Length: 277
Image (cartoon, rainbow, N blue to C red):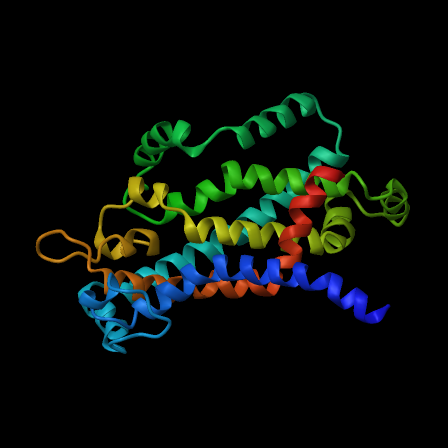
């Protein structure tokens, strides 16, 4: 029976291996060609670099201020993620537990934000940010993930969690003399850590990869984030320097790969539980 069970799983393992190769090969191709000269990139594909040009990774910091772009992206991602989680936790708790006029209408408007792509609102957002004096700064890249569609999704995620918390916890806290804010800080916020971590991971990944907002709101080279920086490796004729783009891309995906590989279970659970609760 044991041998027959193993034999029945062999096709399953073969299928998984085949799918793994399909998904892993593009990343391996990028890594290999980041160590090749431009002439070797579009030749016959190989599993190992032909040139072993480690200088590509040094050159990306010489062509443009890539370290500054990396710092900008990391700063925006961290600040926007923290702001996203805090605002989402507060608003999610308010929608789930507090009774106030227009609550249902406000929650409906929150849901509409989930259905509205950034391309629809980018022009009024640009006019608003320019009126506030935030054009060509990192401020819009921080505010939009907090109060835009990503923030709405995080608030919805937290609201779905808070409605499942037994009301008896709040009643016991009120008996002990805690007010609404004390209940949130000392009870609701701590027990929501698994959902908060899921919202934080999803927000971080979204902010790290965003391209349209930096393209619209940033103009100075020193303020660029990584998505803009990757498209800026061009020669004097405006043609892409593929070896530098691939090397820069390899470095830029390290944080999100680490975050996803470590927390992939939480990401999957966040997506599933948001539709079940």
